Image (cartoon, rainbow, N blue to C red; front, side, top):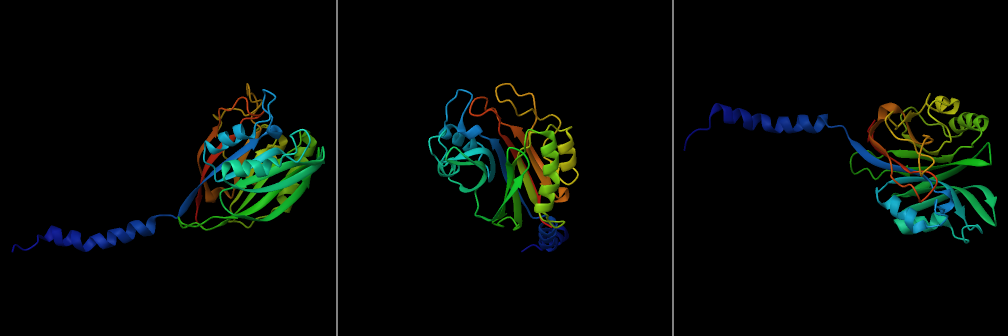
Length: 265
């Protein structure tokens, strides 16, 4: 039998070390697919209330978390249907509803759809129509090494610039996070990137949108970017992709998908 060469012996000895080095240098992380969609109480630009159509759009991008705005619950105009519950059924996701106000025998507000179990629901009234912010805590499953609790806030700010600006400190005070707790704020903020409300929000939040991202409203021919996915703290997040979906009829807004990578502490 021939003796192994010096090079072979050297490679055999360093192979386990090389494996250890690669494993140790890999940063645990997980990917989240976050969708925000103002569904206009299910009514499209063709004047049809069509929840299966909306559910199909939502399912098409396989989101983990969804922020829905302008959701009806048991109102006369939408046929007495609990729209959040129905969209949860049609998408196979879990649901939490947050009422902003009573309307036509039912309620009207925001909802969260989640791939995972949600807990610690909190509802914050905001200035305006009235408006509100719905916050839930979602625990990531942790298969990829990141097992954080995510604070997920779904909101719809008022059309009044004064009310929008007044909402920012209320949100910051009501939903404080420690320096490293990951948080996502998603919704129809009714504010363009250069507006005072967005400038105030972006002091503590990072937008997933790039300058090249297209506008989101009105749906048929969008000219305004007013629907956002925001994250904090910036050091914990990497934005992999943000896209405005091509959905010109199902609502008066187009949905926004952000694909985010969360880094372990």
